[in-house]
Image: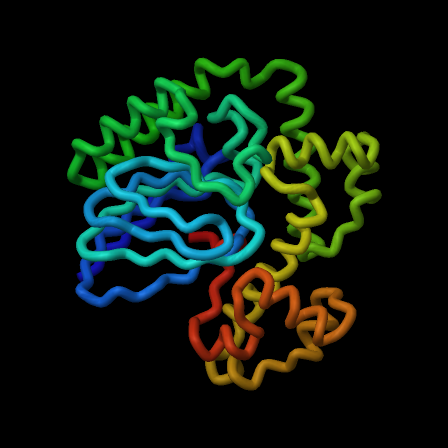
Length: 282
C-alpha cells in the first residue's frame, strides 16, 4: 500500500521551497530504494517503522525522528521496513540557508537529527508534526513554523540580501547553461573573486560551485531522457548526450553518471523511468 502527495508551498515561501511531499508506505518486502544527488537540502520526519540508510553518506537507522539532509555527493540506498510515514520539505538549492543558523556546507554528506541542531523552533516542529494525521494540517503546521522563522531572521540585512542575490544569479546561469558554466565567468558575474565566490556559494548551497555544476549537468541529461520517447530509452545515443551537454567523451559521461547514480546511463534507463528531480516542475 502506498500513498504519495506533493504539495506546492505558499507564495511567501515559494522563493525558498521547491515543494513538500508526504509518503505513506507499507510493504512486507524489504527492498532498497536508490537516492541520487539532485542539488537540494531536505528536512524529513520519519514516522512508523525503522528505515535504514546504506551507502555513501553513512549507515544509519531512522525511526520517529526529524532530520535535515545536506547536499550529497553520491548515491545511497534507503531500506524501509514495514509501515512508514515520511513528511518532507525539499528546499530550493539556495533555499535552506535562511532557516538554519550555520553554513549549509557544514552538513554536506550528512543526515543530522534535528535534536542535534539544538534549535527550539525545529524541535517544536518535530513534536507538533508527530501528532498530526491529515495532510492539510501537516502542511499548515510546516508553513506556520517556517514563516515564523523567516520573520525572526533578519533576512534583509545588507549582507544576506546581497549574497542571496549573488547566489540566485549564479544558480540561474548554471541552470541555463545546463551545468556548463565557467567558475571564473560566474565569479565575475556576481562581482566576487573566485575564492570569495566559492565560500559564499558553499555557505548557501552546501557544496562548492564546481560540484554543483556537475550535478546540474547530469540532472540535465536526466531531463532530456525524461522528455524522450520511451521507445528510445534503451537505444539512447551516447554521442548525442556527450555533444549536447559538453562532456569530453563517452567515458566522461558514463563516469559522471555512475558517480551520481551507481549505474551507467543504459543500466539506469533499463532499471528506472528517468526523471530529473532538479528540473521537474511538479
